[in-house]
Length: 98
Image 1 (spheres, helix red, strand yellow):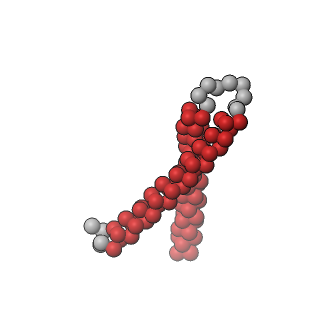
Image 2 (spheres, rainbow, N blue to C red):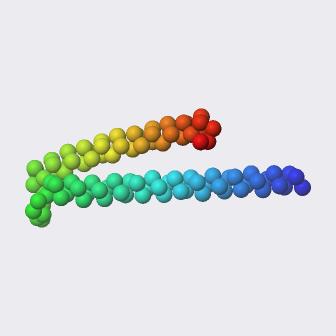
Image 3 (cartoon, rainbow, N blue to C red):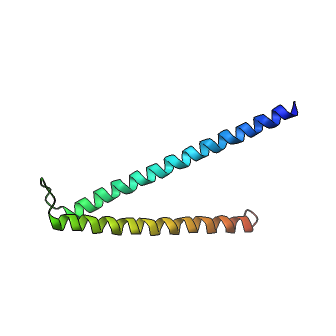
């Protein structure tokens, strides 16, 4: 019977990992959607003062550059945040949980 209990525990771990992977995927999707929405909101407001049926060449260039800058800033902030969380996690572990 101990084999059955061992098997059940392994199965539970696999299910737990599967749920965690799904949550991570959903969070990544939500972050990507937020990025796209923010880019649309900020860059469109900045680059298209008078919406019309078409974008002018200047508006297209502005949107392209704005999106590039926004994504670059987003990546810098994300990397900095991740590094900070990792550093704080390591400090908490090394401080004996204080």
